[in-house]
Length: 359
Image (cartoon, rainbow, N blue to C red; front, side, top):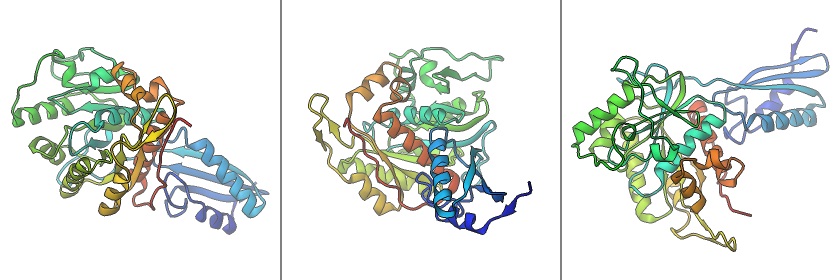
């Protein structure tokens, strides 16, 4: 049976707002087919980000909207394809890596590394091929968080194979030195070592490489943001005023080197008492919203101050893999989806704020 274009179907899709992308399906450019075949609507959606967890709900919602608006039964398919996106001028994308995303903070102690590893695992859970580079030479924590002390193998003594943990391809200076040995190097040595870890690792066909950046906006962080071809950056902060001041410096650093800031993650947003469930904003409240408003970026999500998240990372099984059905894991996956959607589909409307609790 031949298919024909159905204008009413186009109107319905143009009025459907994807909650992850933040705008309608037509303007987002994700509708690859919208036709009438007999008495059925045929709709094909191709997203620019992995969406294994998002696709079933999206499919059901589109099907129901078409039925309510047009009275038609619909055959809806949801697929995705991760494409490489623009990097800084005068830099070329890395071979075998479609997109590099930096996870950064203006200061230490805000949980950036925990967010980075769970973000990488969340993207993988959504169906992407993901790698993780630990760029904090002075305090590499990803080997501990990934539960691996393996030494990278090398087929030729020049190029290293990444260490695979929980399905992630990973690399860290922590795999190459004893974990009690201090790294007493000056800035240029650190930068050179990190570029070697990045370019001399045999990354295998990655959709995303997540880089756990060193804290702060000093020489090392600035040099890396200028030398590494970045598709985007995610800024991690706590609601505390002093953290927000430094987070804004980190955000503006990326803007100065023409790296798209995908959004802000407010970590340690609220403390949930494990005994009574009472919630307390120990580090203040509204900080992430304030930073987002003042800088014109999105709040990708909020995460709690929860001892279980810390314990899971310390034990080498981060939240997304150790407790995938928990509220915290779902929040990490929401943040990962929104960051990837922002990268794939550009400017969006403000996302609804995310918060999680034990209720």
